[in-house]
Image 1 (cartoon, rainbow, N blue to C red):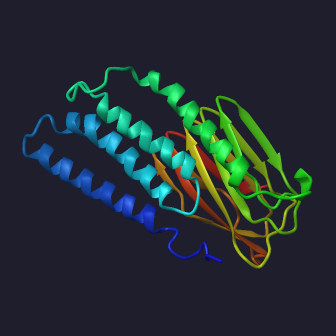
Image 2 (cartoon, one colour; image 1 turned 45 degrees about the horizontal axis):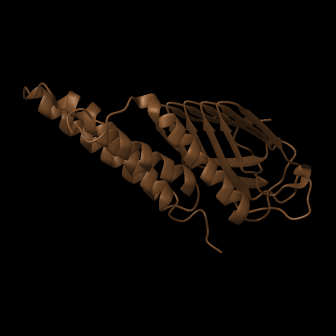
Image 3 (cartoon, one colour; image 1 turned 60 degrees about the vertical axis):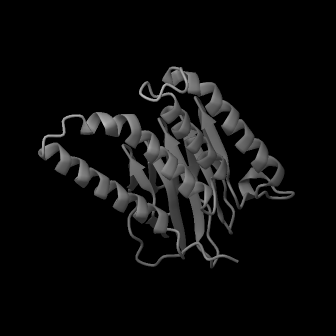
Length: 233
C-alpha cells in the first residue's frame, strides 16, 4: 500500500516555487519598463497556472475528476483569449462545462471509487462529498477513518469527524474549494498535517496541537478563491 506521507507535498512545493519565480521575473521586467507584463500575465499566466494545478491533481493520488475540470477550464480560457481569437465565449459560458466534468467525476467515483460495503453513514471509513452551488454535510463515528475526497464549487462542504478515530495508518483527505468552502471538524487528539496549496484562497489549520496524538490526518488539495478549514470539534 502506498504511504501517503511520501511524496505528497512535492507538487505543492513545485507550484509554490514556480509561482515565486514567475512573480519575481514579472516584477523585474516591470521595473525595467515593460508596461504590458501584467496584462500578459492575466491573459496567459492565470490560465496556465490553472492547467498546472489540474495536472498536479491528475498525476496525484486523488481528485482526478477535479483535476480534469481545472485543466479544461485553463485550456478554454487560453483558447478564448481575444489575442488568440480561437474561441469566442464569456467566462460564465464555462459553467455548464464545469457541471458536466463534475458530474462525470461523481459518476466515476460512484462506479469505481472507494466505497464502504454494508455500512451505515455513521460507520463510513471513507467520505466523498461534492457540493456545487449548494451545501453538503456528512458525519461519521467510525473507529478506522481512512480519508476521502471533498469538492466545493460555489458551495460548502461540512464534515464532522469529532467522534471518529484513526487507525495506525494516517488518514488522507484531498480537498478542493473553488469559490466555495470546506470545513472539517476533528477530535482534539488528532494531529493534523496541512499540505494544501492556496491560490487566492486559504488553507487554515485551527486545531490545537495534541499532547498525546491518537491519530494523524493529512490534509491535501487546493483552495482557489475559496477556503479550506480544519478545526477541533
